[in-house]
Image: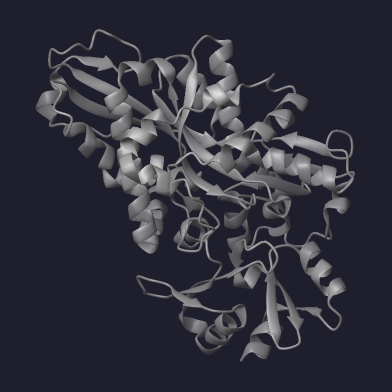
Length: 447
């Protein structure tokens, strides 16, 4: 666990008082510690975690309060949302960020233990569900969801990726309880299991599928956006903390909004910053968080996302991970409304991210966009040694993917990319004369 101090060392000698529900931190000038739990490698939470921390915006907002306190931020990094929830219900974390399914478990555990929490903002979201992907090993013969019947599939039970797996299998006519052997594993363990051959497929959340594909250790089998169900990450706060320190929570949410604006204005710089802090390749971070990335960032709690959260409850109940969850009482937008002020109403309007093909040239501080995937391929073909990364949107779902990892279809003069083979085959079967081609063939045709 790493700590970021807000104040000079001499001030840190003052008595430290945990922010969470401790009234001892009165107006006597004592130092108040705010503990933030985040997931550095779950990069759709970066505006409330990794990027926010690196920019120092929260510390600046706290220093501007001038309320007689000196503030210190204790940033605690975790691999998943579960330990953040455990620490929150123990009164040791004030603010945390996690995905939608873990948020529901956070709500259920908080209520169960008499330590209620509240959803106070959103970080990154995808209205179709593209933040989750099912992948297989590069040489796997599995080509459709139906092929998963009788196989071993690794996922993290209780995560949004598990929710995607369950729903996708149900739609494909495969019983998610009896049709596969589900391996409940942390993402890194599941990735290793896939490489070792002890798992046939892996269903995971951002950024694992993109990372494994980029490294050549996996290929996509199913694009979560095919479900056409919103998925998102958000910020949760302990109710007692929010009530005792509303100005501190509002300072966090103002800082989150600033970090969001920075990411949207400087997508390449933000990707490089997150890559440096996490060890993830910047090319993978950009796939999700870039100008046309899989995720859209906005702190506003949109009605579509609340509705999706209500739909998610049934999946967790079926897995016996929660009982009923009162989503309406869990969602509390009063703090983010106050933090964003008159901007909030405008932010509630959903603006679908425009699909675009992008090239990140080597040595460049910005990417170059193209109207069509074919135009991108023509550029890549002419600059083969000068490309850092190339991204194209799935022709059906709009999910961005690496151009050299996509499944390509030639339909006359059109060249169409797909994340997964099954959607590519579906397009071919519906369009006479269309055919699946290799990436090399697509490049040759485009040139």
